[in-house]
Image 1 (cartoon, one colour):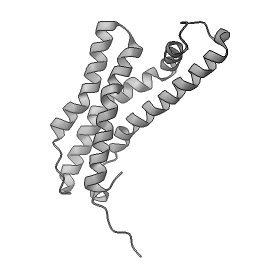
Image 2 (tube, rainbow, N blue to C red; image 1 turned 180 degrees about the vertical axis):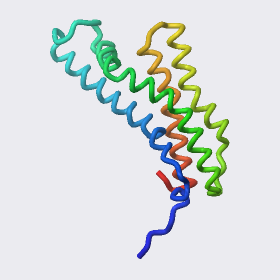
Image 3 (tube, one colour; image 1 turned 30 degrees about the horizontal axis):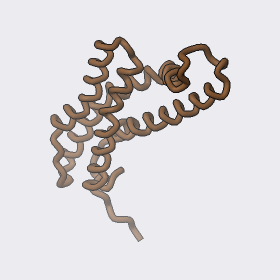
Image 4 (cartoon, rainbow, N blue to C red; image 1 turned 45 degrees about the vertical axis):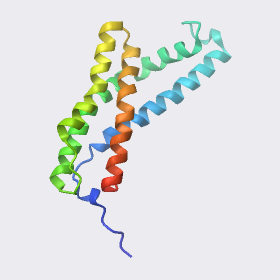
Amino acid sequence: MRRPQLSGGRVQSRWWYWIAAVPIVFGFWLVTVAWVTFAISMEPELLFGPDNPLEHAMLVSMAAMGIPFAVLIAIFPLAVFQDTVAINRAETGWEPSSQSFALAGLLGLVSAVLVGIFTIDISLALVAGFALSVPFALYYLRERHRKLGVP
């Protein structure tokens, strides 16, 4: 028996992988912060830094994940734009506004830049960027799934 063709199968775009990476990477980072916090609280002499284990864990994890986070936040609006353009070309019945969705995706990058400028704290800037990007990414992926069946 043949599986029915999903309308998302007609969309010639894999840009949604980048969109899906935003909440996945952020979730992975939260788990990492929790684990490093636990490790630091068990052995406070392990690493020298702030007295607060959570703050210390965030700083340590950002040292490792900062550049990939920045790249992901920067690519996110482009990925949303490219994916919506591909969806509109495929004529699936769902016509998301490429400009509106890309502008909404751009909010995370703009907030990261503004927080970075005003606080001069790169870690806080990246968290701010993800704070706006993750909910929008989840919304976009849910709508894409509801309308196209993919992801």
